[in-house]
Structures are given as structure tokens and as C-alpha cells.
Length: 168
Length: 168
DNA sequence: TATTGTTATACTCTATAACTATA
DNA sequence: TATAGTTATAGAGTATAACAATA
Image (cartoon, rainbow over all chains, first blue to last red; front, side, top):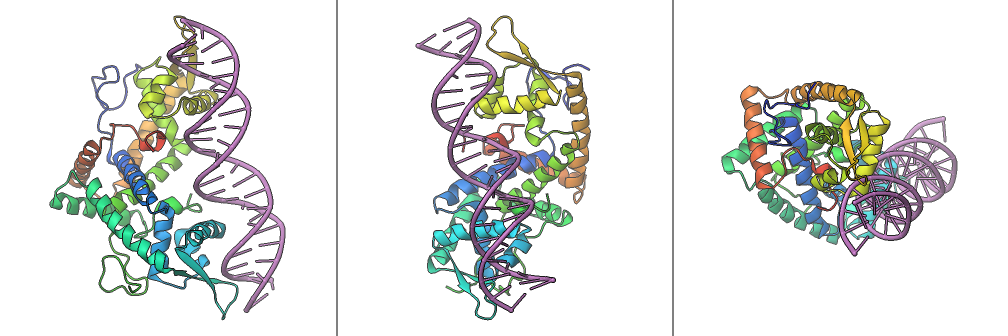
């Protein structure tokens, strides 16, 4: 077999690196979007994993670390580390549950709520940056296609695979 | 501010986790696609980072580790580690260049070439799996939208951001 | 005995910096 | 003195397993 491979019939020396498939583009553009988002929220002092956690706690205040671990499909000790970070940053509070003193009820602090507002603003700016090449119709089209894939692949809405462990 | 946040006006307790934006979906679906691909190629004994490296060496045999490090925007020692792995697996060979004995000319072995063929087959199956929810028109549409984003965001065609370091 | 959370520990990934050998 | 590659080392991230408190 020659050195030529992949799609093109006229592989010049490292010439036109052809389009690749949708799967590669998804992974490439997705990783880029994630990295840019991480940069943005870094200014708030939080990491990407914090974002989903804060949202989950805000949506259902008082939930336990166990429930987070289950929904994210991570090991409980991972949640300990992440909540430790959020508590140290003053964004989340662990409250002992008098009914069952084994579990911790998680709540956002006032500052945690503030950070969530800022996160939403950053998220909006991020969305515009990533989609700068598309007009409104195209954005809607893209969202539709991605949602179709996500649903068919059994991705839980709003749950980022970057947390996972067990599913690995 | 109440516990209600984000898009929906009727946030039931953890009810409908709304669509999120295109940026989140890209990151979510992209990470999923990458993880599934990693699983597949794991059967070949290679990791995702190996794939791009093998392709780059196949496309331009004899290239140096330096040139790989530059194109991928990683530190040279990272390339050492990765090529060590590929050499240990018997897929790549370092040949001393008699003209300049400082650098190593990299070449695929016969087995490396074989693995690339298998990778292409797996890649094709992977593409079909990820796009199972879409018909042909929709796949083409998706590729078009993603290419537009990739170009506008200055992503080098075929270079996955997962290697990066400096650009962080 | 089962459950929640924590700690101790180890492993993987990847960067930095010092170093070797060539030039 | 500059360049290609390597080694030694350290840090981040995340898993496993043993453990403590409570039920």
C-alpha cells in the first residue's frame, strides 16, 4: 500500500486535509467550545464541573451528594471533592439534615446565586461566540440536529459526559 | 431571586431540563462522540491521541517529532511519550537521519499501516453510529454547519484540540 | 447490616525544566 | 551557541478502597 490514504485521490504532500466526517467535526468543535467556555468561567473562579453542579443544586435545593453522584454517574468521593471546592469558594453550603444526620443538604449561598447569574450571562456570550458563523435559521437547524443525535444516543438532557466514570 | 432560573418560566422541581444552547449541545454530543470513538479504537490497542499521530506520519513519512509537536501545538516531551507508545506497540519506527543525526525520521511499520486501515473501518462505523438519528441530507447539513463554525473559529482542519497545551 | 459521606491512596495524563547528543 | 530529542519530576484530575458516623 502506498502512502496515500483516506478520502482524497490526489494526496499531495500533506495537502488538503479533507473534511472528515460529522463525528470528528462534532468532537473537534465540541472540545473547542468546551475549552473556550472553561476559559470564560475561569474568570469567575469556577471550573466546568462546577457549573452543572451549581445548576443541579439551584434547581433542587437541599439535595444530597448521593443524588448528585447518581445523576452524574460518578463515584461519591468525586462529589466530595467538587463540593469541597464549591464550599471553599463560598458558593455552596452543606447543612446537616436533622431528620437523617448522615446526609448533607446542599444549598447555594447568596454568592452562589450571584455566580449563577453571571454564568448565565457568560453562557449567552459564549453561545454567540461559538455560533458567530451562523445566522438565526442555521443556529436553530444546528440545535435541532444535535438534539436529535443526543436523544437517539440516550444522552440525558443537560448532563455533560465529562463527569462520567462508570459509563466508561 | 427565587430558585427558578434559566430559560423556562415554569420550573417544576427538576422538571424538563430545557434544550440549552447550541454550544452546550456541541460540547455534550462532541464529548460523547469522542468517548465512544475511544472505546472503539481501544480494541485496536490505541488511544485517541495515537490516531491523529498515525495519520500525520502516514501522510508525510519521515517527518520529525518537532514538526508533529509544532502542528499539534504541544510540547516536544509530549510527542516523545506518544511516539514511545506507538513504537512499543510496534506501529511506528524511529529512524536516525544520517544527514542530521539529531532528529528522528518517523515511519509507520507494516502493522501500523494495517492498524490505519482498521481505524478507517472503525471510523466509518463510528460515523454511522453517531449519525444514526439523521438521514443523508441532515448529515450533509450538519457537516456544513460544523465546518462553517470550525473555519470561523480558526480550527485547523483535522487537528483535534484535545492535544493542545500552549493554546490553553 | 446498610447508607452517607470522608479520607487515604494510587494511577493517568501532561507540563516544566534540566540534560544529552549532535550540529 | 542552537536544535532534536530525552529524562526526571511535579501537578492536576479522578478512581478505588478502607473507614466513620448514623440509621
